[in-house]
Image (cartoon, rainbow, N blue to C red; front, side, top):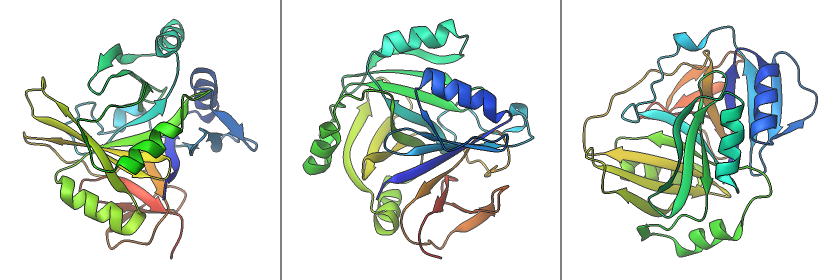
Length: 258
């Protein structure tokens, strides 16, 4: 069962619509309003919602040692060409395009309200394949004609516990892992696949920090998943949606069940 929708809070919905349609070629679904817009990202939607709070009030940190949401990833072609367009448009980058572990090319940059985004080019070559059929289905998606939603990345404490939870409740299964041998923090990445989408989970050998959910500030709000209603703490989003908080502080809603 896939990630169906990713909700991103913004201080100016129209500005964010222009950003995501220009730089990521997402397509508007329906009629945007000043409060909300839905954008098609091929394998999922990105929903932009207005909040009055500014970026400076978020406690989210770009340090991946902070547990919970890390970034939203899109599969692309022509990554260097796309990055050049982003730079020409004045977009702030965290990491310029480079060749990364797993024989992919990646870059990281921010949306207008500070949500971290990633572009990935190429098929990931896993250090360890845990589900050959899942990897084959991933590669069968091919090179996207326009940027395709691929994953949400999350820093977690316990890979086995995370795997068990998202497998039982939401149908995600580990398909492979990547190691980062040059990272002195002991950085490990696992890939939980659901449908055509992925939860990319980071673990570290060093101490990680927690963060209280903030569903009412600018930035990533929550992901919407298929599945059942888990027994977890909840917070209310500004629109009244019941948002669940997993043990690492990652926020999500469920699209079926109660």
